[in-house]
Amino acid sequence: MDIVVLKCGGSVLEELKDDFFGSLRELIENGHYPVIVHGGGPAINRMLDFFEVEASFRDGLRVTCEKTMEIVELVLAGEVNRKLCALLAKHGFKPIGLNGSDGACLEGDFIDQSALGYVGEISSVNAGLIKMLLENGYIPVITPIATAKDGSKLNVNGDYAAASIAKALNADRCAFVTNVDGIMVNGKIKAEMTDQEIEASIGDGNIYGGMIPKVKSALAAMHAGIQKVMIISGKKQFYKNNSWQGTAIAAKERVLK
Image (cartoon, rainbow, N blue to C red; front, side, top):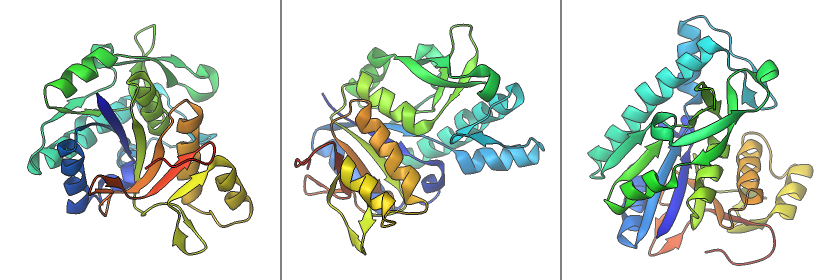
C-alpha cells in the first residue's frame, strides 16, 4: 500500500485552493493512499483569546495547562477537523475525522509535564485502524492529540505527529503542505535539497523567516526515519502527471521524485 501522509498546518488550512484538491484526486487515481494530519494554531489562538487564556510557548511547543488542553481539543476535534472533512467531502472525497485520542489511535508520553504541562510525543500509532479506513476508500483526517498512559489527553506538535504516523504506516512519503511552492533560494524554487544544503542556506540567510520552521519540521521528519520528505503548496498543484511539485528533502544526494 503506497501511503502518503500530508501535514496541513493551521495557517494553510484556510488557504487551500481547488488545485490542491485536484492534485489529491490525481494522487488517489494513481494508486496512492493519502492520510491527512492537521494543526490549528490560529484557530486555537483565537479561542484562547476568547476565553482570556494566555498563550505561551517554550522551544516552539505550546505550554498546555489543563484549561488550554480542553480548548486545544475543542478547536482541533470540534472545529478544524470538522471543517476540513466538510471541505474534502465537498470536493468529492470520503473523509473520516479521527481525534488522535479516540480508539487508541495515537498514544503518547509527557515530554516534560512540569515545564510544558499536557504536551506529549507519540509512542504508539494504531496503524491497523488507519489502514482499515484506507482499504475501504476513506481519507483519515487526524488531529495531533494523543492519550497518555494515565488517560490524560496530550497536545502533540502536528509536524512531529505527522512524522510519527508516517513512520508507523511505513508511508512512501511525508509532505508538509504550506502556502508556498517549496523552498526558495536566490529567487528560485529548489526541486531538491539535502539537509546539509538546508542548514547552510539557513546559516547564510538564503532561507529565512517563516520558512525556517517549515524546513526544520521537514528535517525532523527525515531524521525520524522518513526517507521521502517534501514541502509542497496547498495553493497550487503539488502532484501532476504522476510527478510531485515542490521541494524534496534528503539526507544525501539522491533523486526522490
